[in-house]
Amino acid sequence: MSIKIENLACAYNIGTPSVYAALRGVSVTIERGEWLSVVGHTGSGKSTLAQHLNALLIPQSGSVEIDGVSVTPKTKSLRNLRKKVGLVFQYPEMQFFSESVREEIEFAPLNWGAGKDELDDIVKDAAASVGLGEELLAANPFSLSGGQKRRVAVASVIAVKPDYLVLDEPTAGLDAAGIRELMALLGRIRASGVAVVQVTHDLQSALEHSDRLLVLEEGVSVSEGTIEETAEFLLKNPVRGLVIPPLVRFAAGLRDKGLNLPLTSEVGAIVKALEEYRGTLNNETV
Amino acid sequence: MKLFSGISLGQFIPGDSFIHNLDPRCKIICVFSIIGGLFAASRVADFIMWAALLLVICGLSRVSVRVVIRSARPVIFLMLITVLLNLFLTPGRDMARIGFLRITYEGVYLASEMGLRLFFLVVFASMLMMTTSPMSFSDGTERLLSPLAVVGFPASEMAMMMTIALRFIPTLLEETDRILKAQISRGVDFESGGLLKRARSFIPVLIPLFILVFQRAENLAVAMESRCYVPGRKRARLSALKWSRADTLTLAAVIAVITAIIVIDRNIDSILHLISL
Image (tube, rainbow over the protein chains, first blue to last red):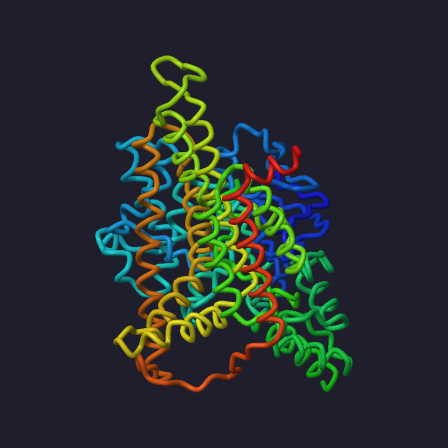
């Protein structure tokens, strides 16, 4: 079970002087239970790709297949596909309209025909899985903090139990604590078997948490691989708008001096590698 | 799903054409003259000449005819209503009957005339907006309305309000599209069910949109205030408007064409009689 994208191309404003190609032949496969980060500069086609994953956009050329079902203008089950692939838009709190967190979370399940008797359990489960206490269910979503609002938005999407969760710039507008909370939450969601697709230009968080990264530049996929492979690629081939985190530069610098450090922005992994190196040095001294 | 893509009403298309480079005052006067002309000469046959004028302007502005025609899409419903009302409610000689509805020859003529007039009104106005940036449109309007300041007319405030409204049309369409898509991905079905169900399904779109509009308005007000905007106060301009010979010639040419169309319209019978001789 996976989302398969082959040679996907998409252009906007076709037939106008401002026509531009957002995607030009992108191919990628997303397996359930993995964390894929799609990184690229503003206008690289990330958000367009995200909307194809959720069947909000239909391929103009190339193909998108969600769990074996092709997304075409004639596909009758587009709503079912959208239930499988939850999409959290950038600044999702701007789409709130309910007077309570409970109503906001139960909105999607109700749209997909959840019964009144099961709603309470669905809302409580979704709220608990994003770390929202029951006391917040009656609160007005507009009165919450930025991090809490973002968690309500995620809860309102995962309440229908999607198999894939796509998030467009999920860290935008959050402070450091909010980002940490959100990444921990996404880690838990991924651990439950749901694929997490993080669309971002925040290389720091992508190089810390993902299983794989897809790098887009001007609508073209220029690299696809693990954190290590992507960091190596970006060090050799800088991509406009993507700033390599200082920790990765630090690790790459020490690598050049002969220390075999992992190219990641995860502090723990670097510290562990340095401790192992210290152990080796101590043994050699003894 | 195609939502608001392709809507080009009020959108400026940057370019470096002859029309783009004209003084905004010239373009505004030309378009208002054309609109006046459309009311003065709107026989169905006259629209061939109005279409020819539109094609010439499209060519000089390097904006594709398709894009200009597409700009009438947002008012297509209004055009349809106008055409249908005229088609079925105009008295005259019977042409056809559909149940209790009666179509007359006069109705067909009037419906075509009204539909075409509305269409040309919209596309000529769109042409102005497509080739004039909001800032220069605002400058042009302000300068044209400035003589009215002596009778207390708030010309600069009016121009600023128009600029802001025009500037935010594409932004709000984009935001609406985003909210619609977000609610579709949360399972809202805008395409099925009865009229009431469909209308109700737009509540989750309208509420966030209103909130967003008010937030944007507040941010804009703060931004303007922090940059010392005082209504009515005289301000220096980064680029002063300059009326050139090309503007005078263009205005003269447009007025000549409009006059010619009106003269032809008024004397079409005599002209046809002369041709037949």
